[in-house]
Image: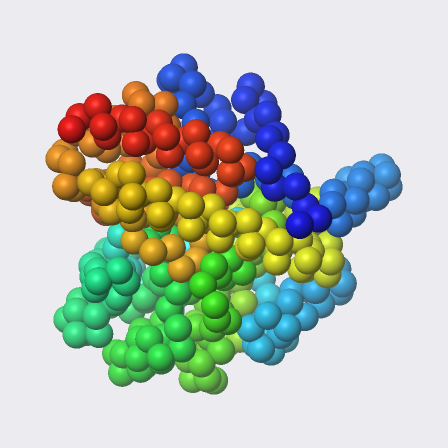
Length: 381
Ligand SMILES: Cc1ncc(COP(=O)(O)O)c(C=O)c1O
């Protein structure tokens, strides 16, 4: 491996949200979804060059950055998009809000499978849209969205499916067959889809990401796809993402609502996005190898050393969704923080009885955290 993902970057007492420690517990942070790895050198180099130009006025998305996003979609997912379909965003959470605000009338409802990344739950409500949920089911070691459950959850006012693929927090990849079945249900019930695909370049199991909107013209016409280089290349602090909307009417509604309220990405976000998409593929492939190693270590560690906690197989993302129910109610995020590991609690995801662990860190850090988890669980046995 040419990239040293084992290198420890000391992020304590820095500007890092993940490593900020207001509780003073000094726990290993494995909560918010950013990685403890340096960005690809091609990105850092491009940023340095841009800083060298000295002037930092308002920026636009250049033809080159738009072309980089288009070329990435075609080479990675075989998905042909027109640069005109892209609406740039400073983050995908604003994209979730905009979708709820602009695609729906006030009486329309949103449906989302749970557990899920919390802004899927708070966003629709903040935009004044009622929210219904449908529970993902566990079949053996796989998470599934049962088609009958999905159909039953759709009510006459349901108008938008808020969808996450690959899925945060359960780490599932929805493949072509599952997506086609979901798309057919959406078509029959005349639903629009907001498909957040921010984790789509982080597939750990074999396969190729299938964008929801790539399933066909009719589905593309009712879909807003949210994408970003931020998770893949660890660029979240640079605030750059985009929506792909092929339907001109939906796109204009969405774009118009960005208005004065949602800023454009900053100049460094665009620069980093272009560099990552144009030159970051080698880095990404090495990252995936490293994350697979961490995922395998974590899954076998839990199976062998902490059988009371069940981790479902992580097909994609760097987030493990851990079932703590067998150990009782007191084993949650608070319990683990006392034991020196900061995890995300399941309740904001509508996943009580679970915690989420971010394993995108040097292996040594992961090993230390796993030992702390094992010791804490031994302590209650
Ligand atoms: C599914 C999903 N969407 C959106 C985001 C956040 O995106 P942004 O930082 O671009 O707002 C995350 C971050 O973890 C995420 O997991």
